[in-house]
Image 1 (tube, rainbow, N blue to C red):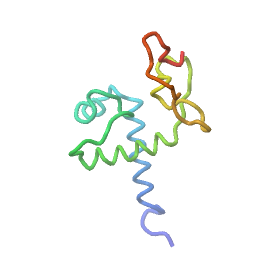
Image 2: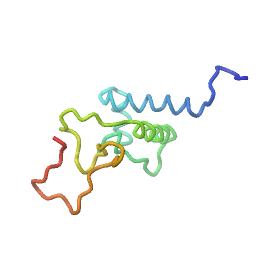
Image 3: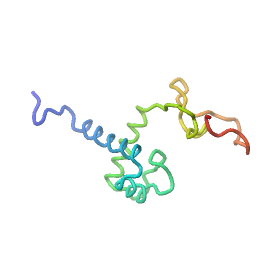
Image 4: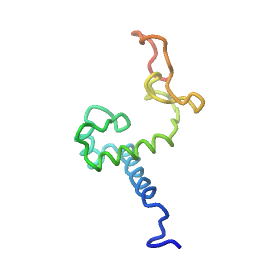
Length: 115
């Protein structure tokens, strides 16, 4: 017998709602709430690159946990490749599932973008 509102697992439901907020943060970076979150927690990088920090709030920690779930279920759609870094971003399909590994440090003039 199910009780209450019929949710089977509140932890999964909560994670799904947080993942929705993460997706909104990625898709609508110019919204007021996204600008406030960015200014407070990751002013010098993107949400996908943000780290937890020393004294992270409960809500920020929860968003980062949900972000990891979102990233785990996402794939790149390479359209023109102008925003995908060859060595830094995980843009290859599942057998490799990561970025390109190089034998040395990139030199000036080496290609850095997929395009």
